[in-house]
Length: 424
Image 1 (cartoon, one colour):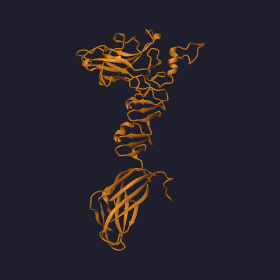
Image 2 (tube, rainbow, N blue to C red):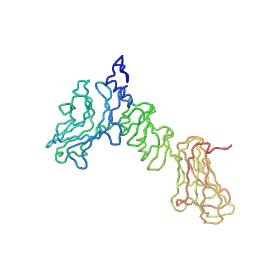
Image 3 (tube, rainbow, N blue to C red):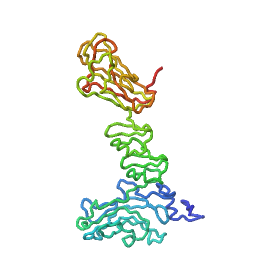
Image 4 (tube, helix red, strand yellow):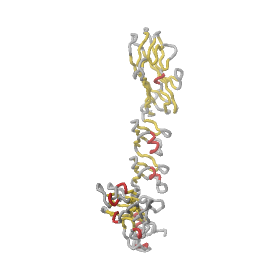
């Protein structure tokens, strides 16, 4: 049949049938793999609907099915059924005793019968389908021979209960129950809970632009944009490797937080970059890093150089240094320059420069801090920065010390020209 009778009419050209009604109501639910098919699953609730569990804390021969709602698809009139279990269903697994030495698999099944398809009744039934004891047990067929009330093919398996020979004395243990209905379904437009990426990716053929899922493994929302699922909000991950696994389709502007680094990152369309990116080096060794620095040659403070740093065109960067030094020889009028050079030590482009004048005493320790903004004019994924010192006036010399008191660092200030701008 093509056109179904519309919800809700009762006059010519037709009569509204139960199948028409099921189609009409199911139009409000999450789509399935066909134009009118619907996603089979439990309807979310805090009680974990339709979950099958063993008796606890004292095992016995029973399993118990939580109350709740679910949706299934008919296989004969291919339209959805909406089901309700409004109280806990207790099922006595050991009413069929365990075998003395072999194991069997029983299935807990939710079966829908339908008289319009020649079934004996219209009941929705939840109960056990008994398996055959074996050294290599298999799932039983769902039919009247194995305990079903009818032979309706319209059923969903909720769980498998493994019944070992020890069940006769130990009862059915929690580990004997395997949940087989784990999928959820929701009304169309609602947020669909999915267990993980595998379940999300299985939505191929049913997803649509604007579909929203809740990742139960990561605790974040993802929206399908017609091409891929995109994380919404902050993706909290354990590490970069964890992020690479879980954030499968970042786009420019996607944000993440890594627990191992305690930093937020933004995806720039190619790589993940820490927000307000900071890179730095601290000279930890005690004593002189470089000694006797004068006017020839300019000395690169190699221990604090920053290499393989990523800069973006149009971004402003704060270049900062703290130098702990003393003067091995002091001459009146001595003056020193601290420089930051890009790309090559002592000969690369000077992008920052500071003048320092020594105190008038030999071997007197002094610490000076320097800061200067710099604007990158081109993207560079592998930029190198070097800190150097040279005497530009006088005839004395200077020593640069380490011991965690000499440092060089760079902070990314972003590319907002309303905050930083160049003045001609």
